[in-house]
Amino acid sequence: LRVTSLERTLADLARREPYEWGVVAADAALRRQGDLALLQDYVDEGRRKPGNERLRAVLASADGRSESALESMSRVSMARAGIPMPVLQREITDSNGGWIATSDFAWEDIRVVGEADGRGKYSPEDTDRATAADVIMAEKKRDQALVGALWTPTHWGWDLATNHIALGQHLRAV
Image 1 (spheres, one colour):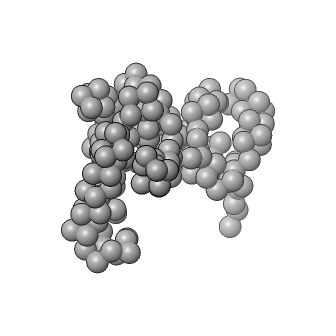
Image 2 (cartoon, rainbow, N blue to C red):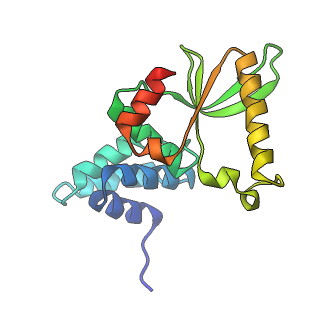
Image 3 (cartoon, helix red, strand yellow):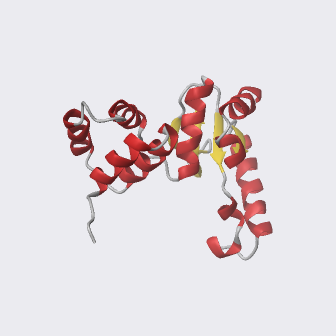
């Protein structure tokens, strides 16, 4: 089988696929320690290649701190909706400095945390908890702790993450 490096595969994919899926793939590549300098070399060497400007835009938006495709897609939709970019993977603590949570997204100036929750979070086989009810109760307890620390939590799934208008409306309402 012929194979290419992570970086070459990403460059080819980002040139050919829609921008948002390029960002999803780029975030995953960076999480796996992809070489950003090598990716930039592919941009520089591919000036005449179709889709090279898309690759450049994908790399400008990529962030290896996004922990899932859902988080990556959410960031793309936030940008398209004109939502200010949040801090990623923000550690939230209580008044005594005790850890409460690590949020997917945090808008520190307005003390809002956003959580991109996929279906897998509620599947018992994908968690160390016994049931979806256990996961939901733990989430409620976490949200109560966030509110107690003067943060406002909000959650969304793929339906909003892939619709920048709806995600923008959701976040503005919060």
